[in-house]
Length: 230
Image (cartoon, rainbow, N blue to C red; front, side, top):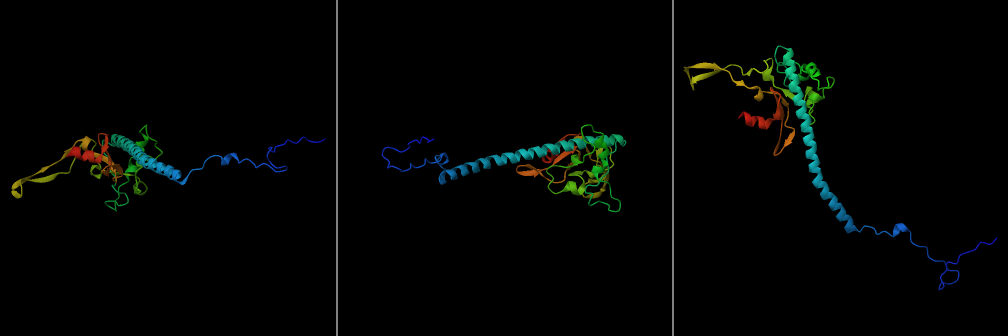
C-alpha cells in the first residue's frame, strides 16, 4: 500500500529542494542586552540598600524586646526570693569568674534566683534562657551564667529599704574642728537598679546603651534612668 506524500514545496522551488526548518520557539524571545542587565542589577542593589537597614533595625528592636522581658521576669524573681528570705535581697558576685574575695566566693545570681524563677508562673523553670540577652556579644552568659550583672551594693539588704553605708561629713568644709556628723543616702525603689546588661549592646543612636530593671519592677534604658536620677 503506497503512502500518500504531501507536497510541501513551493511552486517556485526547484524540484527536490527541501524547505528550511523554522527557528525554534525559544529563539524567538529577545535576550537582555548588557545595558538592560546592568540596569536591573543597579535597581536590585538600590532596593537591597534600602531594605537591609530596616531589617537590621527590626531585628535590633526584637532583641531589645526580649531583653526587656527577661529583666522584667528577673525583677519578679528577685522579689519572690526576698519574700522567701525575710525580705532580704540575694547575695551574689558581680563577676563570678573574678570573685571579690577568691577565698570566699559568693554564688552566681543565676544560681541564687533559679528556684525563685521556677515559682514565677510565666517562666520556664527548666530554662536558663531568661538570663541570656540575645544581644550578648561578649559571651557573658557563657562565662558568668548571666548576661546581666547583679547590683552587689544590695547584697543582703532588705527589699524596698535601700540606703548607703554610713559616711561622715565635716560640718565646716575643710575644718575638722568644726565637728563631724554621719549620714545615710536613701534611694527610692524606682531609682534602685537590681540587674542590668553587663555591656552597652542595644543600639540607640548615636550610641549603644543598657537595659536595667529597678527594684519597683519597671525596666528602663540606662541613659534615661541616669537622666531621671540627675
